[in-house]
Amino acid sequence: MVTVAVVDDGMGNLRSVSAALARLGARAAVVAEPAGLSGADRIILPGVGAFGDAARALSERGLFEPVREAAAEAARGSGRPFLGICLGLQLLFESSAEAPGVAGLGVIPGKVPRFPARTRDGLRVKVPHMGWNSVEVARPNVLTAGLSGGEHFYFVHSFYAAPARDEDLALACEYAGVRFAAMCSRGKLFATQFHPEKSQARGLAMLEAFLGMKA
Image (cartoon, one colour):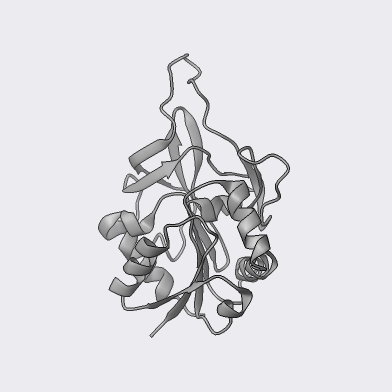
C-alpha cells in the first residue's frame, strides 16, 4: 500500500484529500512535524486559505525547509513524487500578492497575483473564481495522460499562479480574461490550482496516476 504524507499547513482540506486517497487504496498520514515526512512514498501539500498564514504555519511547525527540500528534489526528478493542491500550488511559488513580504517555498519561479476586479472591457469580475472550468493542455505529463483539452475541473481561488518559465506550465485555464496555470509540473513535482479530490472521475484519475508513479 502506498503511503502518502499529507502536510498539515493549518489551512484545512485534509479530510477530503485523505478520503480521496483512501478511496484509491492509499494510506494517508496527516503530517504536522518534520519526522512525519520520513518513510512516506509520496507527499501532498494541500490547502484552502491564506498564503501568509500557511507559510507561517509551515515555519512554526518546522516544516517549511523540509517541505521545500522535498519539493525541490521532486522537481529535479529525484526523491519522492510531490503534489501541491490549490494553496499548495501557490505556496510553491516565490511570493503572493495576498501576503506581501512573505516568502513562498520558491521551488517554482514566478508569482501569485490576484484576479482583477474588472475585465479589460470594464466588466465586473466575480472573485473568487469558483466552480467548474475547462483546461488546456500546455505540456503533457504522466498525470495528464488521456486529457486532450476541454476537460473540466473544480476551482476555488482568488489568486492565480503565474509561472516565470513556460516549461513549468502543464495545464492552462482562463478566467476573467486572465490565462493562468491550472497545473504546473517539473520532474516528479506536480501542482494543481483546481481540486482533483473534488473533480469527480477526472480528478480521481489524476490522483490515481500520481499514486501509481515510480518513486
